[in-house]
Length: 268
Length: 245
Image (cartoon, rainbow over all chains, first blue to last red; front, side):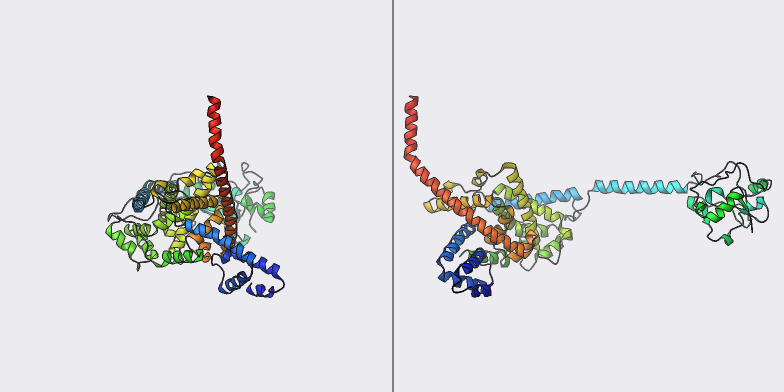
């Protein structure tokens, strides 16, 4: 900017004054850097108009600075002592509201009030207990507990050698078994008390058609009953698989399944 | 020159021991007066759970907080409330203190925000009211002499002019010309860039000067009118009394 001022020196007096006047508000407050301030003060020596402008700005600024020294009535040491006491009392009230003083007389840093913290802890505990109770009750019933049909589900054993079990509500290639029953025929093994719903039931989806499990072993009394179930398609089982069944997306297998009645298919 | 005065004020604020209020407990007074203990150290001790360091911080900064608030607001009561509230806010937010920045910049920002908020609320609630400033003026009976009265009138005019300024210009003028902070220090306090702070200072001084000169012209015109109406007014009263009689 000082270079600009120098360029306009000489006959171009007007533009130079304009530039200097733009700088005057900062010049009177000593807010220009040294080189620029020197250029402005050099111009003021020669230019009466700009000097008058600077004097006006300086006068108003002096009045403002002088007003800063003004001490109003009632502002004295007593007021500041009182202000200190009031401030500390307000801060201590804040501390008490936030959790109170600690044992050594000092105060803790701000935190949630005790009541709020207690309520949060109680709500969290209640939620945790409800969740635990809902999954740990051995006798609790969910939509997966119990048989999906009124009659026993046919098993591979009951359908005869070479048959593949298809559970209509879970898709052609899904087989379910309760963890409590051993597929090796070791008998009924109940899940441990409180082991929860997710451990007592397992839903297995088979990705590859060749890996289809032939069926599962049910409890002894079911196996005996199912032994008398004919290999024909039961009339009660719906012919059409509901659209929301997960296995419905597998169209090729589904088409064959529909052709055979929806739930039983001859093994290849 | 005004600039010299503000520079001296800046040096006084930043490089000398703070002026402490009297009547402090001995421990607090020692902590507050110990220049080797920095503000950040007092903050750290407060966060560690001690009470005295915060009381020392209050002692160190309450006068500055009060004066900044007073110069923005122009009223003792409001300035006192703002200073007190600023320390409560400071206490609440001590855990968020940015250790890489200076404490006083952070604290001044809290004070300035509260003061500007209070000023805006007051302006919107009551508008410009001369009584706001009269309450801040010293009792005339405490002063004797023509010079004191003139100074009082001049101060009154300054507060009236400041009250007409936009708070953003007023804040910069107060911090720079009255409290002597540089534009580099003002910028973080007002959360603006350095260039914006300089621009506001530039425009603020121009506006202040225009309003100040207009105020002086009005004042002189009013004095002239009072002088002219002095004899005429007595005549009017007489005429009125004669009329009633």
